[in-house]
Length: 427
Image (cartoon, rainbow, N blue to C red):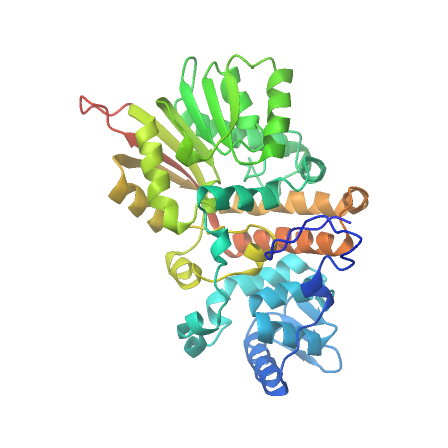
């Protein structure tokens, strides 16, 4: 029985001596009656003001009407939220204590009102009650390797079940909505080509990619005639990416290295990085951008794709340990556009030339992944991933989709340029 690795560092693979690979899900946390009562009152207050319906077993509906949330075990639901906050809310779903006929719609309402769910006085005291990031998950070189491995080394076969044939694990760019699954691979190529065009990648371009994924961008750049160096911290991703490079006959143009961005060396005409900045951490954003600046030749171009969130919400939540950190992306932090642009401005010679937003495209990308993951649940189980893991990933994909549908999250493609030595910007 395989599981996602929890934050306490226990193995992803359950052993015979560990019959409960999900200890925080199997056991409902104990909470005092006063704490549970206060939590129940706060939950009732929050949900009662939202455009949804919350149905608690043994009592009537609350809310202003809209998507339905069914709480099957109110006592456990309130105990988890009372002790773990929003981490407990996600764990309660994993435990099957609540559900929703349209999970994305319900979560979209919650995401759209995220700033209002917790009363203002408690928001101001967040530092006192919200859990903090474990020190071990800082994105130091060693910490980054461990954090990346816990997600991206789960199983190449798992990701292949719900991604398209390009194995692209980032937002696609569609021609119209609703997006059709059969067009996802073409939409991923459209996204990649836009980035390569922004970076002016062509014959002979010395290109550095930060974050290989499973190699599709590197392959597409190599096919243009670029000389590509791609860096990853995932051993499993690198292994498959190298197989794909060999199958494409591009070994002479594309190299894939198991290497941290801080260890990169050389000089490049262009750097491309797709949704990797979310794994850098605010502490290391200046290091990241300075490193890219140093690697770029004068006149070079940086094409960056990044998920973003509103600046005020980023500041309010940046130090909080969340359900996503515990179960999906340890050490992750989504930046704001302001944080990205100010960091580049204050720490590098890079200059912002262009920024394009396309958050609605990410919502559609996630919908297609979620639907495919659901349809292939039996195959996910056959790979050794248990029912709790499947609920975890259903919640993760729906939670992410809701973030983009509500506008709480967005995704941008950036172009930064580096002035050449003669003071002439590259066209």
